[in-house]
Amino acid sequence: MSESAATAAVKRPLLTPFNIIAGLILAAGVAVGIYRFAVGLAPSTNLDHLNPWGLWIGFDVMTGVALAAGGFTISSAVYLFGLKEYQPLVRPAILTGFLGYFLVVLGLLVDLGQPWRLPYPFVVQAGPTSALFEIALCVALYLGTLFVEFTPAAFEWLGWRRWRRLVHSMTIALTIFGLILSTMHQSTLGAMYLITPDRLHPLWYSAHIPVHFFVSAVIAGLSMVIFESALSHRVFADKVEITHEKLDSLTIGLAKAACVALGVYLAIKVVAISLDNEWALLFTPYGHWYLFEILGFVVLPMIGYAIGFRERRPTLIRVSAVITVVGIVLNRLNVSIFAYNWRLPSHERYWPHPYEIIVTVALVTFAVVAFKWIAGRMPILHEHPDYRGEH
Image (cartoon, rainbow, N blue to C red):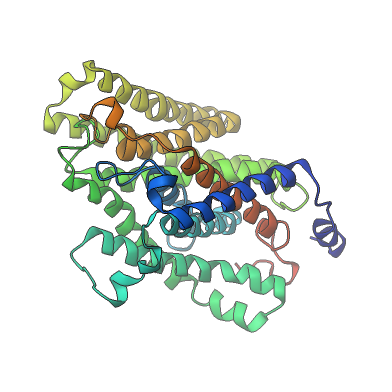
């Protein structure tokens, strides 16, 4: 990108429709956040002892971690499996992953009754046999790993050659470490629900739910990369260096992987129902909702990916990616909210408080704004002219 283009990126007008809307959402989120910390969880949420986890865990944490899986998925494909043609997608995926995990931490701070105790598992009373301890440890370490993996772009932007060279030399080690951490905590998020056989509906509960969470996270990562790359190519057209033809070729390749991953996920879901012999539940209202999730957001996009790959139709692939991302969100919300405490009467069931929704929307908006600001200034979607071919 030329110096004039970089200057233009910085000097764009501030009072655009996007900035105004985003500013209003962020202001509302900050106001609600202050209110939540001032009065506590009870007045600002619909959480209680029967429903201790709500939208801030189900979406901000469970869904956020899954949708941020593109970082370890793409970096592993490029640096560990030698798929160098996907190199242009690595930095956007890592930035998306870093912002996603950062929002997970912010979501936890808002959700915890005593957020200042977030470091307690590490420094006060470690629980090495606890799933929550393992998730806290892995998420903290992986957030730091993603930050280090992101820094070469920042160092290139700042002109810090020595620091950039140092971090670049650690690429393989960081990728392996990130892959290990992601494999552990993506599955352990599902493992937390192993202790809820009487609360989580049998169609979503399984002894193999950790495997379900990990495989679906891989699907989410691939689909988010497809969606994010297409959106970035349109929004940042003046900064993206790869051509539409090259992006279409990469998208078609990712579609093959996503189709296979969806097929594996569908198979293990069918096996889970077979092992528990829960077929009769498919003919209940909850069964209809389960079929809606599986048929509409697993089978349908899997077919879309397959046709898109076979007939080389990138638009169909991108539509399938959006459907898949929505399906991942629906699955995590089903497990954490809609199919949880399913035996309780309707008046005791949890439904998000408007303040919870405002905070969640504000967190997502913050991620979009942060990505837009960083990608508009740093070499995320293009190579820095001083480091071409060195990634």
